[in-house]
Length: 282
Image (cartoon, rainbow, N blue to C red):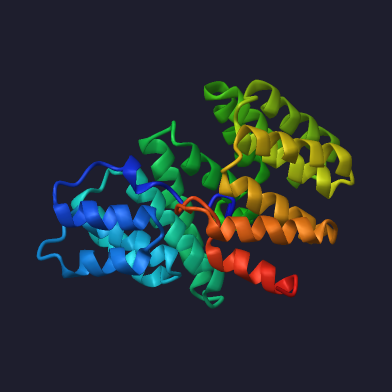
């Protein structure tokens, strides 16, 4: 699953009326998952929004079984909520990754079903579309994956959002080891969305992976100028340097800045940055 992708802002969900939910949601957005969870669990009544937010907190804490249980309870109260359905798919997916060989196929199938349902409920949700595309690219055919499905989905995305569609087509080409085509698609995504930092970071990482270091660094610099306080720019640049074993002092400084930045659930967890610093000997 897309780790860059990793989390969604709960603020995008339907608002809840209770003050407990509001306080818990604010803490969630500040990545204070345990504190958020404590408020929700102490609340006398738990509606679908509270159960969903409970599940999101469990998910961020790595408690995927508890997360899916909470999402299932929320879905019983709000079965046509696209965001909730997507969260269920993500939880099933994480469970499938660590399950035994007997349980994993069933959980993987549930993952696909939830992603497909989320896209059906809201065909404009980029996060759900992205996770479904990743599933099609990574899962074998007997679990509902496949390159043809991925290609069809990428075409659908292209019709609705050209920049995102070319990015999706780049992922398909890369999976097929058509690296020149993938690079062209990622470049086209940047051309069509020049102010979208995420696409610039994708191209920068891709070029670095394929030995175009000078241009990759220039793109990272461009992203940093566009969004100087964006934690993801810091993290991705540091991760690229560490993977390539170069500019390690810069990588260390970027990770230190990242750990001091106000993170959200959409950013990689602090534990990953701390592990990378440890890898550098910090």
